[in-house]
Structures are given as C-alpha cells and as structure tokens.
Length: 260
Image (cartoon, rainbow, N blue to C red; front, side):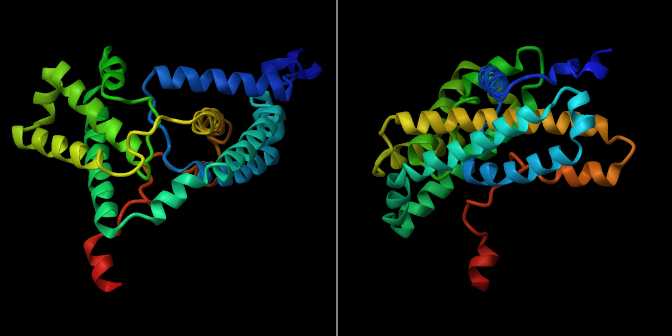
C-alpha cells in the first residue's frame, strides 16, 4: 500500500527535509572519522551527472528510499559549494604566489600525511578503529592544497601515534619517520597562511561538501541494489561518483616531469 499511495520509503520528503537529512548524515560521518574529499569543485560538478542518473531511474530509486527531493537538495548543495569557492579567492591567490620550493614542500607534506592516513585506515578496522582514526585527525577537513590543513593533519598524526603505541608498531613507524614528519610540520609552519583559522566560508563549504558526499553514498548504495541485475548500468552509475582517494592535485611523478 505504501508504494501505491507514494508514501513508502520517504518518497514524500521535501527538498528541505532531504537537505536536513544529508547534513545530519554528514555530521555523523565526521564523528565516525570518515575522510573528507579534497576536491569540492569536482564533487559539485559530478553532482549534476549523478542527479541526472537518479532521474533516469527515478521510480526504482524512489521506491528504495531516494526520491527526487534528494537530487534537488544535492543540486542546491553543489551550487552552494561553487558559491563558497568563488567567495574564497585568497587560497587561489596564495597558491599562485608560492615558489617552486614552497609547492614542493607542501606536496611532500601532503603526500606523507596521505600515505600515513591510508595505512591507518587499513589497520583501524576493529571495534575501536573509528576512535583511533579520529584521534589521528580523520573526519577533520583535509585539503592537500591548503598548508593549514596539511600542517594540522601532520600534528594530529604525531599526537595520535604517541597516544596509540600499538598502532605505531603495527604501522612500522621508525624514529626517523617521526623526525621526518616533525621536520615537515615545522617547515610547513613557515609558509604563509599555515596558522590561519578556518573561516566561516570554509566551514560552510566543508559542511555542504560533507552533505553532498552523503548523497553520493546513498545513491551508490541504493544503485548497487537496484541495478544488481544490470552490472553494466550499475558500473556506469557508480563511475559518476568521484573517488575519495583521487590525487589529481598532487605533483606529477618524476617521469612525467622529465618528459614535460
């Protein structure tokens, strides 16, 4: 009966309700140490393709609890992300003003932080894993393009490894590794903008992006079940969602630099 009268699985939710649900899910994800995507503009652009796919399968997705209101809420969030980015020119100006040495330092520090964070996720899958991941900074905003984010990530890694000796041993972190992280954090602290607090604009951007990622998660989960009998279409839909571990913003590899 619920399917016949259109009230099943939340299909009557308004855009406001859907948005509130996504924001709540984003907050829970942050509390659960879910990693943040580093490319908000990429998420905003991908949202339009994902919503278009949602509309193509509107009836089945709505039946499974993802009605059109969620798509409209996702588009609103995508527009907000683009507006917040447009209102934050300072980061782009700072990036253009970096010397090659400063850019190399930031790339090295970000790469180091990401390598450790990736390893931590592999070793933090037990009952207390989420708490351990939070202690090492997961769930906090992290952009490899922003020195303040990378510096904070390195500091949280140092503090977390000190608090979780067993994780440090499991990771195989050596004394020289700790020294490298400390050196990177110290040198990074000398870059302009490293000590700047997160602005209201940045906070709003992070909140909107987290909610959009929550929409992507819902879409992926429901599409996986709804299209289980059509693996090609399921793969197409899932490919529309940007991968969380994309590293497009990092330095090109040595061979690429040599060939360029």
